[in-house]
Image 1 (cartoon, rainbow, N blue to C red):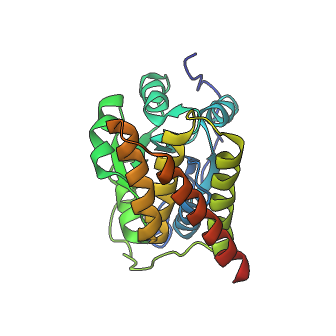
Image 2 (tube, rainbow, N blue to C red):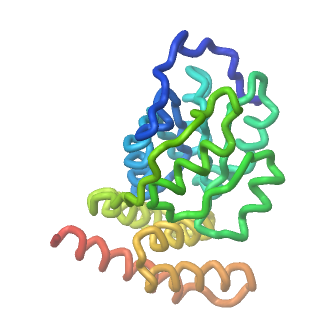
Length: 241
């Protein structure tokens, strides 16, 4: 069902400032990772934007039936389907969301996002405030941008460890609940993304190896066992901090 975006927006929005160039904007983040979402929340907070979060396509549809964001950031790998399908709907909806950006930890996913109708692409992890702001400002309509000089910050954000713990707990729950193959492709891409954001090369390798073996038809049961073990190790480590 196409997304309906015919709801009234707030009648007046606060003007942006050089320090908070996204002031007055509402950003909908469609992202299943708590760790990535927390980074984006901090970036929006520093930039002056309000943020709403949806962790699935279904949750995003519920948000969009209630209000229209100015900016939508859509992760391409979600638990109930590809974010490209939502990007396609949003790009064709009237009135259109002002800025639609695809997101992924895989730079090779950019063509998919653009083909679906995204205005641009964010490769995760993105921790730098200036890069985040410039990516959104460059895609806003001219009449919505702040003209003139503005401060450029070298500030970075660091999500707290609790959000990373939530992601590993989520992965552990899926691995426990799904003994079959129906969620293995999803869990491989989810953990690869989380681990890239967290700088965990060992989990990235395990997740990418599982994905590769699934794609090529090679045996992968030992990969699943390796990932399950690493997830439990990370949960133990995080809880001990």
